[in-house]
Length: 308
Image (tube, rainbow, N blue to C red; front, side, top):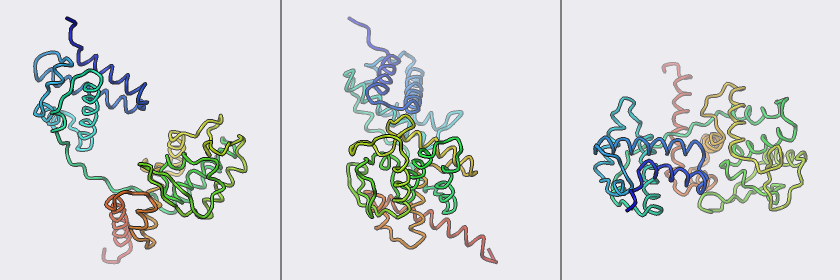
């Protein structure tokens, strides 16, 4: 009879599956692999024996909770958000054990992670947003069409409140952009977003300079060598721009979407309208922006009131 597969070998198979079949990012692989390694090491110390796949199938909910308590109270205790992410990784690991190695464990579903309060979005100011949109054109190391492309993408994020994935999923047939842009967001949900003249102008300026022939069903935004533009490129671009402008690390592509919502709220737009524009399924998600607006109001009050 063959020896049972060790937990370490199962972990390696799982990471291979994530890398090659699920196309997980290197950062996800590192985080998931680290969480599973700590999990296996804790169980082996806790039980006093090497863990195998059959042993993992018998892990109790109490043992998983003990592992979470260990992470919470160790030399470098994890925050509730990090604990929740670690538990999510282990659930994914056990789903792999169930589906690929015939080692189901129903006890994992009984464990509830810590409650994580979603942090308030961290938008940029209107002046900072204007600076971010103008900065690509000031880069002497970038070709004019690349600068126009980056400005067009950033303008879509801030001017229409798009997610970066939504902006980069636009096809050539979506442009020239009219008064309204049809966007397919999370879960295949479609919404109509008004497009400001500045958005249309930025996309038109990019189209006038892009050096590649674009078929109607091909991606609108292209990388330097002609392939589809990646979210990672825009994240790197924002990192470069915020360094030049002296902005904090929270100034990410997604921060421009947050800024779109926050600035609309500050100008008097109602939450239901903002919910529709952002494509949020739940109003409670949109209500996070009221915390940002209230914080800005209190900050302005404290700075301006003579008795503050």
